[in-house]
Image 1 (cartoon, rainbow, N blue to C red):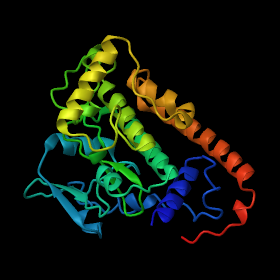
Image 2: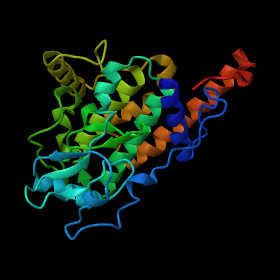
Image 3: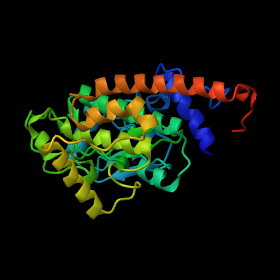
Image 4: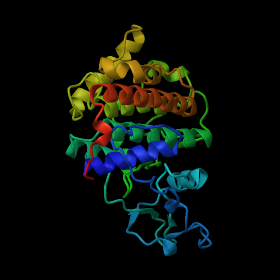
Length: 304
């Protein structure tokens, strides 16, 4: 299964301009179309709903004026869960029901997901956050359970009930993601996007290392999450060092992750550019070493 997933992920990354991991799949399938999310946008009702033209299962989320407003601001984007409108009678928000569920559950259930696939998801999530920031929206609830997988295994962001549009510089976030994703309180004077940037750093760390910072796996208890959150606060106060990726990954992606943790990014657009560049370097070097170690690899057929 995950050979096919990785092939799709590799093709997806190629679609954003990267030369990627052909060493894993000598003949990867063509990139899956991202246009299916926009294909029926012209067939709308007066309240902006596309429910009538949508053919899949629909998830009805409790009415939330803030979240509905955020979906309207974000409009259609391949890295954002498609908004189908709202029920005119109940006010419920109508969204596609994605059978692959959320990314945290998927990672928890599968321990054999190729790094190329996880890297592609990392880029796609960062692209989604960059789109939010381009629309002057703060996600404010960044965590892996708020990332869904489409039927063709692309990552899309969801759950904007806590999101803020046009937040002031010192906006006080009263609610946020689970403790382990929360940025140190000392960052309160920095960019209002601080919650998104630090949380995205945690997400990238998990996707790259398959564990949370300062933890052995991806399943810390609430008590352990709170302790790690406090450790992050202490690191900020003492100008300490945040957790590191394994050395062989840190040389490529460590700078990007650390700049999230130290809040050197003001928004996610620069992060996306640097993450894509790091991914490209990793692909080139990994392909080079694989060819040196196994020159016959390109003649090996892989059944998908």
